Image (tube, rainbow, N blue to C red; front, side, top):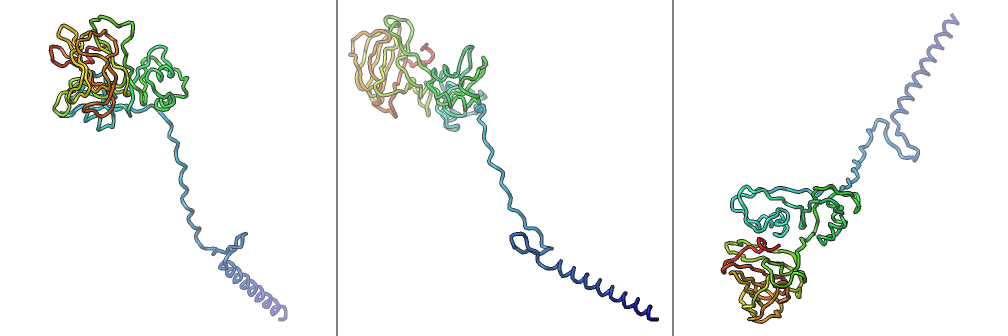
Length: 301
């Protein structure tokens, strides 16, 4: 009997101890926990959301400057298209091998990514030579066309965008002076306005921009028929060349010839200026046949 009672008491003590252990475990689970730094948090608390980590900005790698195409629509003009793409007319003319601003509906124009020139690589071309020919910055050419460096090998026929490039205009050479049956470039500079209609009016010549004082030369041997002030044109020189041809040179700063004087092809007759109705230093150059204006780009070399 005593053994039974002792066994019963032992069992009761076991269950009491077990109950104490269970209760203690539950209490511990509900107690706030502390991390190594002593900060407490509830055991069943959800982990806070970590702030989103932004991706590092991507590096834009320079590549070939994109060339776009524009299909001419009814009513569009070259000047309007140039304004649409924030280009100058000279850039559009050069990129599309146009001699004037006459457009045809459906005509496809190449649109450069900025002011400059599109160059087709010829055998033996180097980036240095191209930059020098177009008076352009070689690092800009390297970046715009995705080249590794300025010594990159170029493929014949490859097209390069020359940012800020200027088409070279040939100047009359001293060896070409004298009587000639062909026209010479009257000055050096950049064509800023071609021959053609502007807002319903004919721009009867081309504008070649450069600095005030740039020499202006006779485009062909001839006789000075006018040297003075002409409304709109400012200081102007007109030469007669025979066979119905004449040339006009406007917006001059100074003329160095007199009416009745004969001049040779390539001889300096005046200096570029900004006189008359002008928006900047340039030469307005006209070629006329029987007093009818011709596109100078069709007769210049």
